[in-house]
Length: 237
Ligand code: DC
Image (tube, rainbow, N blue to C red):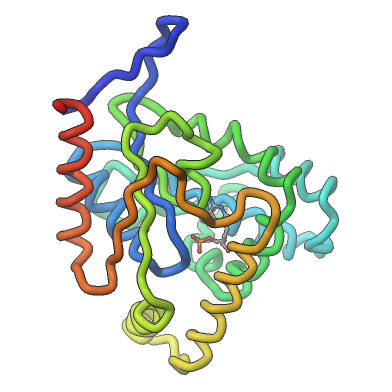
């Protein structure tokens, strides 16, 4: 099913499906389902911003020191493992497993702040594009279709109401044994949405050629099937 994309200079690059959307819109789950079905790799670009946020916190670096953060982004020593197995992808920073630590609200809030800085975003571009390898890549984030992979074969923009997304995040955290209040999560999500959508550098918007998919009323499996259909149509029109 894998398609090749030929560029004008005859180089061949692997196909990419971009999955953009706000916090807890289902990007991670849907990306994993797609990667399993297609046998492709996943780029969890949010994890890169979270890793940078975490590293900055560890170094007590102010989260608005743009040149220092951009330099830190270039030097990040990161590794993802387990993407080719059924297990959750493990994330390493300086050879330490930080998979749980980068998922905390503290790392998420730091990620959202450093992600607003244009020099940081530029510094992470090459790292993200290096994930594009045969047989293909599912790229999960906010600006995958608009900035990082503008020539992606299929671009998806996921939406879901803030209430629905807060409820999902609530259930995920309760399942992990973390005690939280739904109303706090709703406020945090609304706050994060506002910051990610209003920043001037690569704000959260759908690419012009993206297909919008509202996941409020459908399951992740149904969304993944719809995306697979779109991909198949794109290679066999
Ligand atoms: O998807 P996530 O919650 O792991 O992302 C963490 C933060 O990183 C989020 O506030 C927005 C930012 N981010 C971004 O600006 N661009 C991306 N491609 C991915 C994430």
